[in-house]
Length: 258
Image (tube, rainbow, N blue to C red; front, side):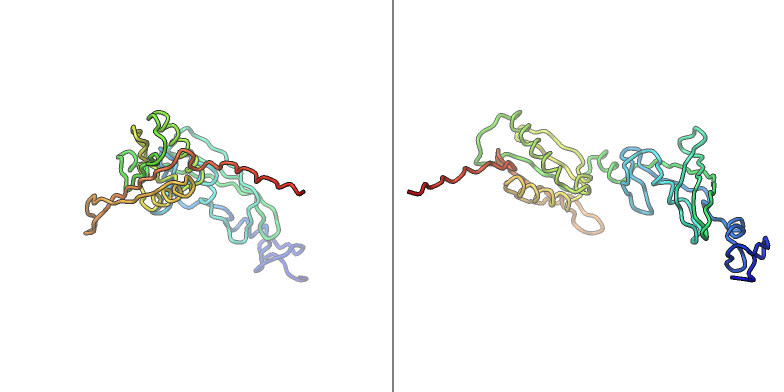
């Protein structure tokens, strides 16, 4: 608007907001900064990150990535980020010395801001990995052959059941896969131990449908927690030899017209 000028530099040929042009506002304001020395807590076994009180598996990497670092940058509310370039100095894997070069737009003007900061990396074993290490489980899926099926030798039976299990796991959600703790090989099949009963039930029911099997559920008292009984649940899933295999149907005979 005619007659307006920047009260800092005196220019009148540029737009001003609250009496200050974009260039002077950028030099007086902090467009990009990092508060304090951030700490990233990650599990060295599975790569889960601790966000607040919860563990999250973003990329399942035990190394810091841009997805970990970008949220640490505090951007001015009037600035729009276009690109971030990261460089690192130092050799300490637990105290990362980082530099972010941020291309942004502030009040219509393009700028590049550079911020240097340190990130402390803390290694803590997540709850799931801790449970797996201690062989903790709340449910077990017993994968067995159908009672009315043909008799199979143990090695062939386990190989067949293992293939069917892998097919089932391929259709399962990530949360269900993450609940699987370990498996045990038995003469009569496999036992799969899980750290979450709801995930085990969902997986067992999916197996019943996808593998055309039968399912039996039972619970045993394991102990007490916070004054309540705690149960471990067993799901016995029996699948036939052709479970999950779609067989081609024979074509219907074509009647000849006389």
